[in-house]
Length: 389
Ligand SMILES: [Zn+2]
Image (cartoon, rainbow, N blue to C red; front, side, top):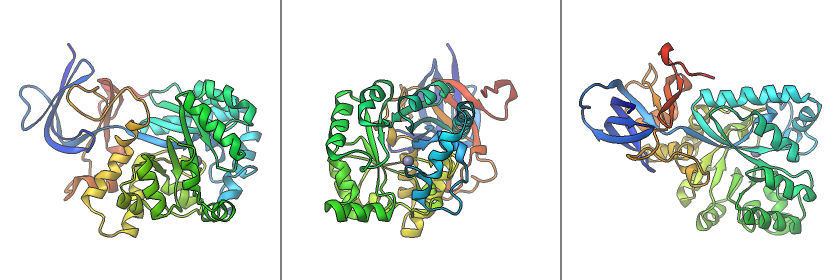
């Protein structure tokens, strides 16, 4: 039986990422034992490096990696709204170049510790097909399709993992209701961009008497994306309905939309995840996303400390497991051996708080290995074990 022991580790266990200073035993693809103290017998000495779950990137648009930096000199609607530079770039780029760029974005995710992502895939059925074709690395892609028109809904639903609505104005209210109904009947995911810009939130309030978050909740979505200009009351509504928000602070900032009020979600007890959003704006690297999110949170709430940092790390790793059906869970005895090993390197030495330290300072170059079902899928430092695409 294949057995491996990692000693002198800081293991972030369970749904709350509780830290255990000790050792972890893997046998036949599963975690056989987690214990404090010294490991008996032979073991790989991690020198107080970290064992933590891999990242789940809850919101991407990876095909727009063909449009990098085309946002320069433009406001958010000119970039990503219908007719924006993103869509002009997607329609004018040959398919083979879209595939090459999409594959590069997937590999970048993989090499930075992400093993699952949820993509809003534009372009109807054809768009879903492209990502299905490209998504062959160990990264699991959840593809939320965007029907080109209402008639295409059933075809997109048949091929995709759900529907990702670009906005609440993309379809008529009746069509939105039917999209939500059919998606729920198919037992698939439904998500929608909400309150990304202040203008969208204000126009919604003016025209319908309600902000975008409240309107989205009428559709019973699996989650909402952005909530950049959501109010404290919106976060309470999300919390009451058990609907998570996916925050994308870097893309929001780069596109000039603002920064999400993560402190309001924490105050309301709203569940939240992180996404890196458009690759045209930033790389799908979750280390960078959570580090930036921490800076945003600290800017709005300087009292944010270890507990808040731990919650941000949970949002990037274990929290999305509630929404996305994945073949791993939090790190626990009896669970699948799917986790990252992060070495201390030069940047993670002398941390007075491990959660804030990890959120603020960990980088992809700290990745010593990533295990999927007990098998190494990424390894650095040991050339004999190098299993990199
Ligand atoms: Zn998006």
